[in-house]
Length: 199
Image: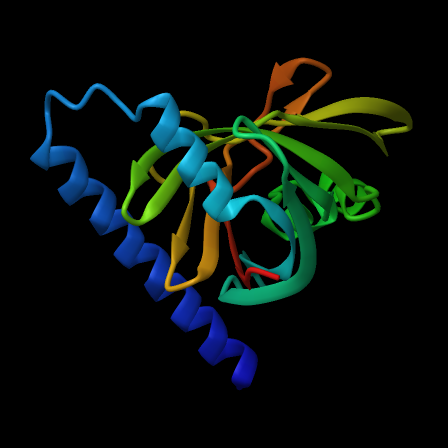
């Protein structure tokens, strides 16, 4: 029950942040972006190593949406790159429509996820997150396949924000490619929410 309440709270926070983006974006059509000095100030506000929780959803065997979570760590050490450590690629498996492929992805090892970031707002400090596609090998159909998972990039729904001294973030898995070919394995976009208090 506690886990469900936390997930509901986190999803509510992410929704509120997305509304903030919309209002900020509409207010200032001639916004030229942050100055180098503002970027440095914003970066220093979020710079560091973090341990937190990652939230995601999938469907159970009855087709009902189930929320899940796991502990995760990430680091922001430059004003342009963030690393999410040991991103659990296997968490995508329950969102994969093909049962054979789902079982193969469920065995995938966690991957470090490199993300390019760009600061877009000072109050609150906000940055867009552009994850680089995750790549790994999965064996199904009697042979190995190169799997790629791209994420949404340059999108206001893929972001990080420092709110009330806490960091909240969201990235969204967009698709699955097998051997360089786009598939229909993923049942839909899969959002991942992150929350933690700065150390």
